[in-house]
Length: 269
Image (cartoon, rainbow, N blue to C red):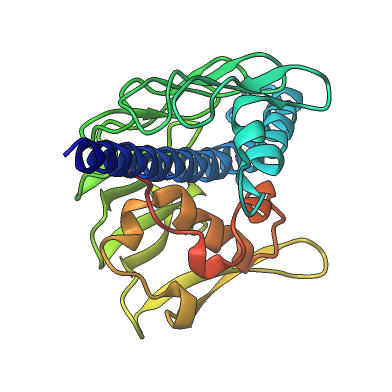
C-alpha cells in the first residue's frame, strides 16, 4: 500500500513538474511573440516619425529590443540555468526567471512584470505600449506615446500612424480602405489611398513610382501573392504596413525578429 502511494505521489510530482515546464515554455513563447510585435511598432515609428520624435531614441529602442531578442528569443532552447540567470553583455539583468518573473531590457527598463499574464507592456524608452496586453479591448500606443488604436485585436476599428494620420478605419476587415501617410498627390482633399479593397485578390492598389530625378508618380497594380490577406492577417496592422514598406525596398529592423514576410503578420495573444 505504501509503495503504491509513493508511486502515485512520484507520478503526480513528475506530472506537475512537466506541466509547469510546459506552461513556462508557453509563457516565453508568448512573450517573444510580444517582442516581435513591439519590434514592428518600433520599426514603423522609426521609419515614419512624427514631427517631434527623437529618431536617435527610436534607434536606441530598436537596439534594446534586438539585444533582448538575441539573448532570449533566438536560442533553440533555454536551459534551466539560463532561465534563472539571464544577463546581457553589459551585465544588466534580463530576468531571474524567464518563465514566471519580470523581464527587463539591457538599459534596465521593465518590459513586463510577468510573461503570459495580463500585464502592462513597456517600450525600452519607458513609454507604455499597452496597459493590459492580453485584453482585446485595450488601446495600443506607438513608441512616441501617440495612440495607434483604441481597440487592439478588434475588427473594423481605426488605426493611426505615429503622427496621427489615418491608416485604416477598418482594421481586420478584408476589402477595407487603407491610406498612405500623406495627402493625395492629385491635390484633392484627404490622404492618398493605398487601396479601397485592401487584401482582396486581383483587386488594385496604388503603387508609388520614383523617377531618376526623384519625382513621384503612381500606377495601379494588382493585389496578388503576399498582398492577399484575410481578416485575421489584417488585425496585425503594423505587420501589414511593413509588407507595404518592403514593396519599396525600405529596410526595417523587424526583419531580424521574423524569418520571412509570410510570418510577419499575426497579432500575438
